[in-house]
Image (cartoon, rainbow, N blue to C red; front, side, top):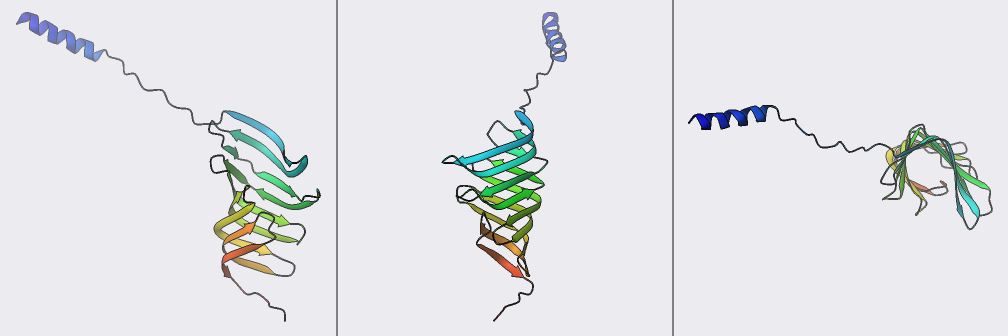
Length: 172
């Protein structure tokens, strides 16, 4: 019996001194950072898109975050500047090949002198389309259009406001 009590006491003492091993915490932050970034996307040796950003974070899965905003220029086949896009914050989702701009998003079509403003905008480069579910304002020559939701070409040359609001002047 004494021997049994000694074994129980030894297990109790060993159990109290046990150090707890915690599993390692997985790092989910950026694997690289860059400041004052200037990138060019080209097709057939012609610049199609110029991108400027003050800060770029790149993640393990290929996603990219632009926490200080982004500015992009889109060029036509002849090399002339067609449209611009800027946002206070941007994120590129590599798996979906899709961009999201947030906070004072602005798209300008320089050919038509039109400007889109919204708080959130998505861009699919493969389809050359932009879209949002948020409130939008489009300034045209002399008119301002309002609404919720938008589907458009990336250069804003053709668009549909899903739920337009406000008054529109129709010229006969």
